[in-house]
Image 1 (cartoon, rainbow, N blue to C red):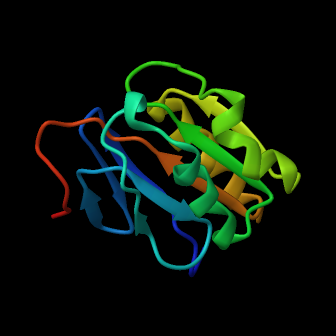
Image 2: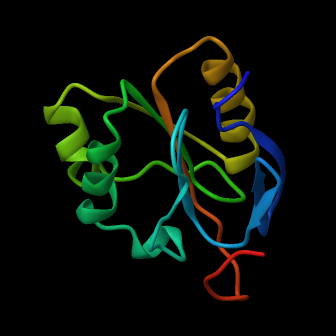
Image 3: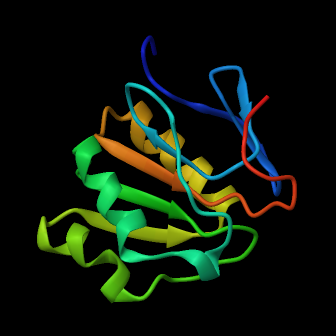
Length: 124
């Protein structure tokens, strides 16, 4: 589908969207610009990380928590919950697959993919 941000590939250390490989955490709206997400590890997550997602106006957020399934504390997601935006947590691989299904259905979804890597910020 034209104009849709689809995940083409993922590894524990990267995610490829529309031919660009990112080696840091990213926010991926179903349409529009992919944004870097300033969080290098699950333990660094703060409420502000989830508040930034609201500007993308999602109906649903798919949170990829890294190599394993982890759930952010409800207090971190409060801004999303207050705006009635759903959030689903899963490991990043499962999150990528679920995100692709939802965007193929035309849903207004944002993928919040946590890439925990020692390589530092930036993309190729």
